[in-house]
Image (cartoon, rainbow, N blue to C red):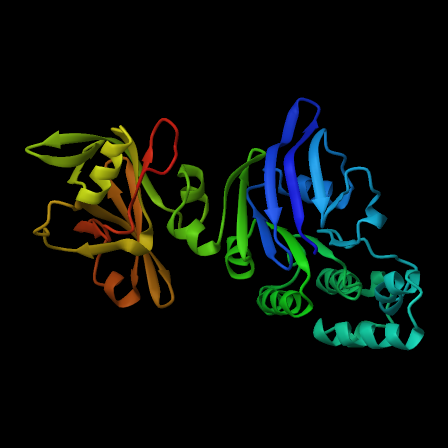
Amino acid sequence: MSKVKINKLVKKFGSTTAVDNLDLEVEDKEFVVLLGPSGCGKTTTLRCIAGLEAPDSGEIYIGDTLVNDLPPKDRDIAMVFQSYALYPHMTVYDNMAFPLKIRKMEKSEIDKKVKQVAELLQISELLSRKPKQLSGGQAQRVALGRSIVREPKVWLMDEPLSNLDAKLRLYMRAELKRLQKELSITTVYVTHDQAEAMTMGDRIAIMNKGLLQQYASPDVVFNKPRNVFVAGFVGSPPTNMVEGIIREQNGKSYFEGDSLKFRLPDAAAKAAKAKGVSEVVFGVRPRDMYISTTKPATETFLPTELYIGEPLGDEMVLDLKMDSKLFKAIVKQEVGEKFKIGDKLFLTFDETRMHLFDRKTEELVY
């Protein structure tokens, strides 16, 4: 078993708390992504697991072993840094073979493993070169290769694809994920790239200011964000949000914010009432919004004006003005091209996919 378990982890740098009372459990053979903005504590968490930073308090287990006092070399982990950390005096082949030589593996087995991984990473022709002869992307692939050949209990990866070009990054996402499943290695992967997190992770741990915001599958994180931060951070473009209050009128519930007023779906109103919440943040994703030029028959719509259109090939992002707020909606290119700046439009949305958050706690209500 190569489970990773973190209990009440705290790590401070002076007066700054980088990781704040973190509880996290990575199951055996699971691929978990730590996602968040710069400075959120994700890399510090990874370095604590690796033994490169000492926690101020809390416990870290790899398998059933408490590793707080174990040096990195005794944790049976392999880490790929954002920087390459290659030995400059060694060839690519020797860099990749080094961890296997330390383990006193047979020379023929070392040769086989190094060449297999080099072929996977498309660096077979680089094996005789020194690190100074490599491009940034090539050096990062060598660093990945050195990690992969070890077949450790746990992989720790800190933005390992950040220096690859876009085409190779897409290829390596799939290859890393496939290889991780094939070798059944428990993996903790740090990134700020949402696409990497959503496509690679079995579960995603979203962090902000040292605190864990949500820990769930990509589907749950996207469709059921736990709070305002997650809703605003995950997704591109992010969730449209506006503050307001819920008012009762003639037996119906209405959302009122700025000059916006629309009837809330019954299920949303019921959920807010059950939790005693009247001050809310309304949220809906750009892909769940629909545009019309005529006023809908329903009371659940938002009047708006086209501010600008942003073409994206077969789709278009429409920036829609509502007083001081801009909402974004994603439509097919041929639909977006029918509208021009200044057009008066009406927004409706998928009522099953909207969200309400408590404005005071910022936690999900509906």
